[in-house]
Image 1 (cartoon, helix red, strand yellow):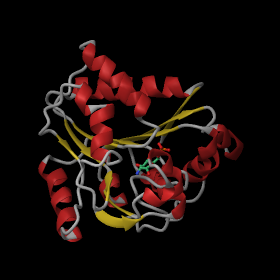
Image 2 (tube, helix red, strand yellow):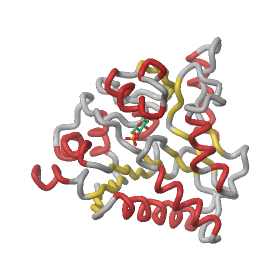
Image 3 (tube, helix red, strand yellow):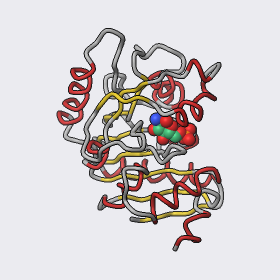
Length: 246
Ligand code: GLP
C-alpha cells in the first residue's frame, strides 16, 4: 500500500485529479470507478478544468459509480446521478451513454437490479481504476461495518451514523434514505487498482484503524490492506493518526 500525505485538502484534490488524468492518458479507453460525497468534489472540479484545457479527455472512458440511494430514479436533487452530473459529467466530454450508476427504482426487484449492474461492469471488462472516499465509520461505497468481504453489488440498509453524516446534503436527517444499492467489497477488491481519498481531522482515527489496525469487517476500509495496487491520498489532518500508530 502506498500512502501519499499532502499539506492541504486542495493539494489532495489536485494530486488525485492529476493521477486520474495521467492514468486516462496512459489508457484512454479505461474503465473508471467513481465515488460521491464531499471528498471527491475538488478532484472533480480539477478534472473538469483539465478537460477544458485539453489536458485529458473522457471521450473513450467508461465510468461506473459505486452507489446510489435505493428507490430513487436518479432525477431527485440528492440522487448520486444528479450529483455526478452537476459535479463532473455535465462539465466533461464523456458521452452520456458511457457513465453508469447503479439503480434500484421503486417497484423493481433488488436482486435483478444488482445483477444487472454487476453484469454491466463485467461486460465492460472490469474496472481498471477505482476512486474511493471513506465514510466516517470506515465504510467504502455504502458497505457499512459488518458487511461480508466477498459480497458483490447489493442492497443495503444505512447506519444512523452514515445517515447523519450525509444529512448535510438534505433538508433534514429524516429525508435521508434508509437504504442504498452499492458495489460490494468483493466488487471493489476485483478492481485492478484503487486510490482512496481521505480528508479532514474527523477521519484521522478511523483512517489509522483502517490502514494500521487489523483487517476486520468492523472497519470496511481495512480490507484495502489486502489489495495489491492501492494508493491512499490523505491530507495531513486525516493522516495525523497514522504516524502515531506506526
Ligand atoms: C457516502 C458515500 C461514500 C463516501 C462517503 C464519504 O456515504 N456512499 O462512497 O465515500 O459518503 O463521504 P464524504 O466524502 O462526504 O465524507
